[in-house]
Length: 534
Image (tube, rainbow, N blue to C red; front, side, top):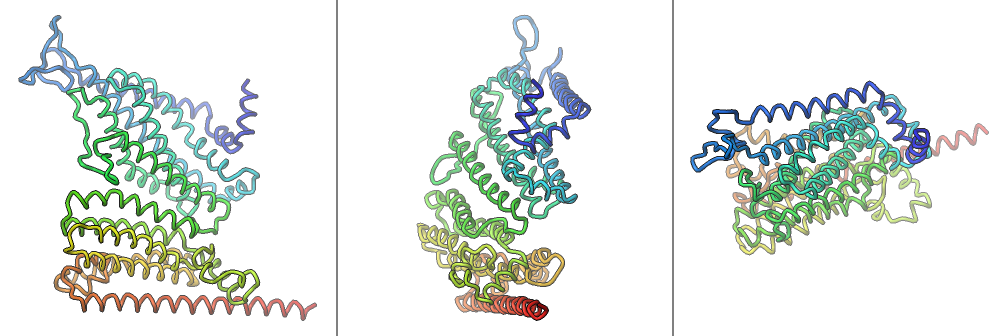
């Protein structure tokens, strides 16, 4: 029976069998089982020690009278609120096991794949006839196998505690479904982190632990909603949070559905990038066509939270506050898109050479189409299209704003943000063309300096937005200066933005032309020498 199961597992996913074989050793299994059981016993003993003893006048787990003193039952014993006691055990076990599952899984996956890449064994795995989905799924299911085992052993006590606390079993299953979706999302992101060059497992684990808290709050809110009749537990409210006027702040079914929909959508996007990068390590993380869809989805997601403010609080300060938040999130998003879409130096040289030599395959395609959709072409044009998509959405939102005050300044702020991101994209692409050992580090450093250095200089000079609005229009916070800037100041700032962008574009175009001509001459010279030697 064991041999038959082994053969089926090997046929279904050889990578998973390889991981199981290397990790499910008797000693490792014994340690995982022992650790899980000891952790559960520790939680039980701790909460048992929190129960009130004889003579206690107050405890969070005893039933109380109007004076908040513990009361006794008919037998003279303290009346214990066992539902609240079991609920706290359920929450601690659920949260603890989920964090171990998430952070431990992300750490082991990152460390394992980084080690495979460092030793070169990942290239041998790429040569196997398995698909990238099969190999990476085997990694996700097999590398944290011991963590899965420890988590599975904690499930019976979690179920018992939840049911004893009055949590419906379907709510428990819903929480596990959300936890599984969150873990799969972060596991996939951890694999992508390694494939794009990351190697520090602790950074991936720290990032996962920092970004997972919104989902923990959602899961806790769902549990609270199912047992809101329990007077000892205060339900966690999200207030008047709406998404496209859907009351997700009070309707946890909608909140749960929105969370699962986003997890599924962004996990699917990560797997598109994983398949591209695993099959071709020199490929960009995301194609230009995929990037347009990703930007549209991201902007619509943010628009859903910002749109209800049109009706609830249509003031000028709310408008600028919302747009400042949107601009900050968009800055982070587009910096990530610049990194994900930037082809390496060799790809740019190949593209420039084919353009210079005018091969038949290149002549059959429009240069503009290649800049918009090509895999190896420079990315600033694609970034400009993405920014146009985002700007169109937010300018329309500004125009729909009920109050006219501040609309023009808000639109100018969108234009300023677009200009700055285009400059960052041109800088990054220019740095990736330099002859350096790690041009990506130079690109990241240059863009980082362009983002933060002006702000640091302004703060050191104590130049406030009202005193130096022109200088602040070159920082990542142009919104602060628009209220104090005149029309002439804004025009000068925009003219300077476009001049810098035009200069960087001209330098980038010239470098590509020279690179293409040099590569073409070297290629033709090599061909002539070969013919002469023959």
